[in-house]
Length: 618
Figure 1 (cartoon, rainbow, N blue to C red):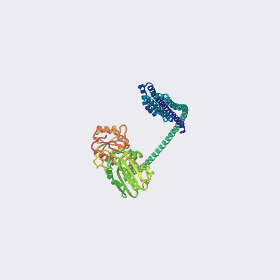
Figure 2: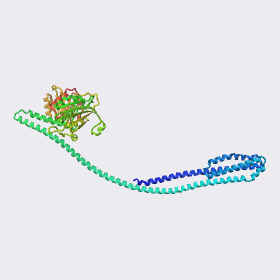
Figure 3: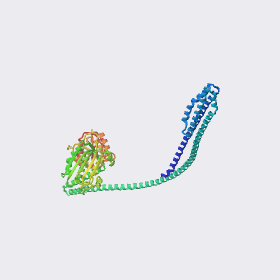
Figure 4: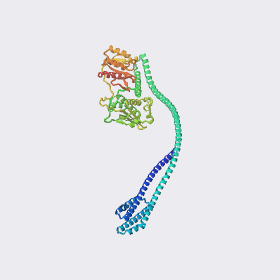
């Protein structure tokens, strides 16, 4: 590409040379005009010098012929002016040998002439007029004047020759500049033609390149569409594979639990039909299987971030201290437990029961990884995840967090195991030793709470799981005491209205409440519930399902509380995306009991709500 621009560079260089030569010519002409003016002035000075010599000679001749003193005035003025005139001539005389030589001749001749004039005037003044006139008639003065004129003529010829030489040189430069200008114009024309030709060729090349680029873009677009379709198919296959793994795990575990329940109930039915009443072990097996099924559902909801959370202001140090006995019972005596609790730990806003479940899950996993014994360390600390960390970890916002770390001295995990550790139903434990939902439940709860969880592990070096929960910045709310416990038993004397559109669930719920000693009224819909509320003003609590046709539980509660401001409300459902749970968090001041629940959980919730001060759900 460089050689193609060479003619353009040469053309501009020639043009610059012509412009520079033109400038030099203008300067030369200006110098010639100045030299001509100096030559004219020099000639005028020489002419003035000749006039002064002639004035001096004329004054001397008039005085000698007439004897009148007045004729000496021109003589004296000329004699006094001649030195100044010579000084001006000397200042303008060029350092030329010929000119200097002629000026010296003129000076010598004038000196000789002045001496002769002065001598004749002195002779005349002494009364020797005859000798003075004889000296004049000798022709010596005339010869001197002729010599002066001859020298001046030579000087004029030398100056004229110099001016003529300058003019000739200027004329030659102008001729060459005209030739160069014509050549430059021709070169510019040729350069313009060449440039136009090159531009057209380049334009054709650009058009061809654009057409080729368009073809490639079209081909790339087709390829992108093809890849997107392939990637979409791959993503769909991966989704189906993940769904298959999830549904397979759910089906496997639920089928096992249902098999236990169905078998236990069938055996209990057969024994009762034969009049036998030793069915307690079958009922216990069925209840245990049902509880495990309910726990499995809760873990799946936690993994999918759809479990209803009831966040509170929590001091993680107090929570860990309160559940230390529970952790010791879960791990056994062979595991040594150490806690490292940071001073000045920040508060967090999270569901304390879910934090306890997460720590317990991690502790049990650590116990299984350590086998015959080891050391479990639980640590808390204030932590700041900066922007650089957030950039390299998806779904992490930079900011301040409370870190809870659970470390063990077990067998550790390889990188490929860490990559799958949070997947549901993925486990490295032997058959019947784990569901593969423990870490996925922890992951779902932490993400639903706006936090971050990270595994650090190497084979043979143990494992550390760090949970980061966002710092809570409002110090005005009270810190809720943590720890597992329940309300003390209280006599059941209140009347409860149960609203449930499923007849079997409604019957089992009312039976459980009656078993607890409550007076129970049931309704199958929101409209029927409002009618029974109007008929029974002594109802103390509304226990309503949320997902119902026509009028859901939230609308029913709002209408009921508007009519009976003292009425207390407990919501229940098996589906958490509803009118009282938003973004996975229960609405403020809402009482909620998730399905399925045990009779003990029902009793505790009823007493907890009935024994609180009067308030209405928002």
